[in-house]
Image 1 (spheres, rainbow, N blue to C red):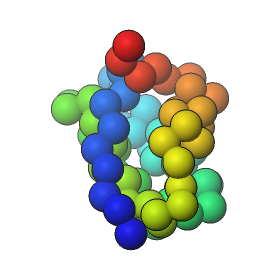
Image 2 (image 1 turned 45 degrees about the vertical axis):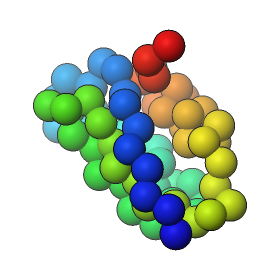
Image 3 (image 1 turned 90 degrees about the vertical axis):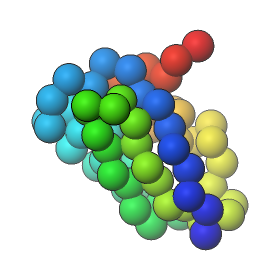
Image 4 (image 1 turned 60 degrees about the vertical axis):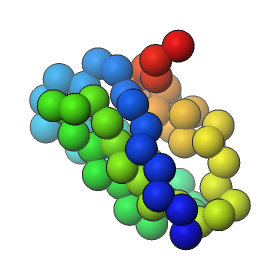
Length: 68
């Protein structure tokens, strides 16, 4: 298991947190996701074979951006 912190832009409320959390926890290999709109970060715990591109795609598909 690996813990990662991902910065997510445009999270403005708890509804945004829930959307990002749900998008990430629907990915096989994501054990936990905890989004915080106040810090613009998501803490995720993933299996070692879950790649960052998959996580980023889920965040983009949920309507949010990652910093350039």
